[in-house]
Image (cartoon, rainbow, N blue to C red; front, side, top):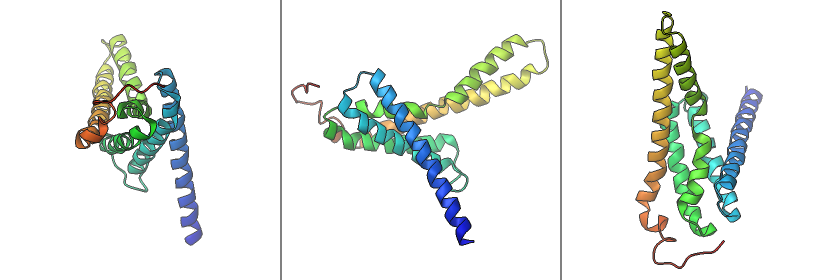
Amino acid sequence: NRPVLVIHIMVASLNIFEDALFAAMAAIGFSSISNTPRRTYAACALAAATGHAVRFMLMSPGWFGMNIIPASAVAAFVVGLLAVLMAPMVKCPAEVCLFPALLPMIPGMYAYKTVFSMIMFMQNLDDPSAAGYLAAIVRNGFVTFSVIFMLAAGAAAPIFLFNKRAHSLTRNKKQIRS
């Protein structure tokens, strides 16, 4: 069974790496359209890749099998911690690295399913199947809202915990030019 275990670990590692890579690419894209300095791209990519990989591992049945909501909170905390630690290296506030790194973790599919179910519910008001659409609105809307709330709470926690370090670049300092 050792070869099977090795193959399982290799496949899982490849899946985690793939997830991290696409999150890093998305974070660089969000950074570029947000007009962040180019020197922050690597930090944003690293924070996004790490956070997404953490969430992927926490949600994977072979690892922890956690729900998307608490997994997103833990991953956002990791992203926030990395942003606070890397901010002095890139000479920017932590939020500059934090926000683009969090955006790939927004639950777009759940938000899409919520809006789709709303549209279908409105088109089928007289149909008995409308109750199913209403249940989908509540279920997907709750997941979307909860994940976004946990992303915000998890990302804000390191900024509050390490308040002095998080704001060291923006207090009593001269403006840094890019």
